[in-house]
Image (cartoon, rainbow, N blue to C red; front, side):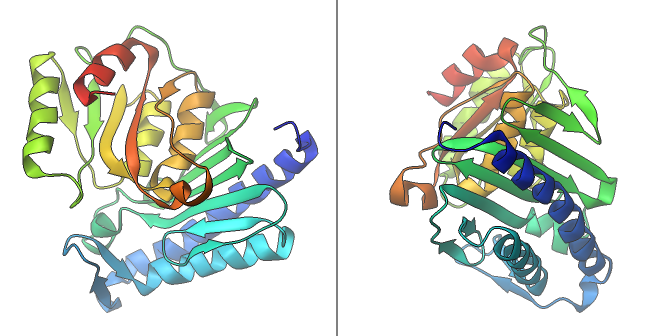
Length: 266
C-alpha cells in the first residue's frame, strides 16, 4: 500500500459497499423472478450462468469506470480489463449461481480490490439475508456494521469447516479431504458459494474453509474479510496472468490453521 493513500483506499471502500448493495438488489430481483431466466451451462454442467450474472457484472463495471476510470477490473463473466492506477477490482457478480437458479439463498455478490499485490478491500453482500460483510486493510471487518473478531478457541473438533468442490477436483481427492477432516474429529458443510463460506469464516460461523481449486473472483473478498477479522489465509498468486488462474484456497481461524493445513497438504 506504500504507493496508495488512505484516502484512495477509503474512497474505493465506500464505493464497494454502496455498489455491492445496489448490485445485490438487482440480483435479488432476478432471483425472485428466476423462473423466467434463461440458464446456460459452461464446460461443467453444474457450472451455470444466466443473464443476471452478466447484467449485475455490467452494473458493477459501469460504476467503477465512472468513479475510477484508471482502475483495472477482473470479473468472472467478462475477464480482465487493464488499468493504470495500480488498483484492480476483482468481482464475482453472483457467487453461487447454482443455488441462485435453484431457489436457494446461499449466493452473494463478491467485490474485492487489490492495491498493487495486496488484497486491500473485501465486500460481500448476501441479499437473501440482508447481510453486508465489509473489510478494508487496517480498518477491520464488519457484518452490517458490527465488528468481527476471531478468537483462537475454536478448532476443527468443536466447530464446522466449509469444503468446496468443482470439476477441477477429482472425486477421489475430495473424498480424501473429507476423510482426513473426519479422522481429525471435524465435520463439514458445502453450501454452493465459496465466497459466502469465506465470509462465514470471518464471522465465526465456520472455523475454516478449503477448496483445492478456486479463482480470484471467488476468494479475494473473503480473504480480506478473514484477514481483517484476525484469521489466516493461504496466499493466492496475483502477479501477471496468475491472477486469472485457479489456485488452492484455505482460510481459517487461528485455532484451526495447523489442522486444516495438514488436511489440505499446504
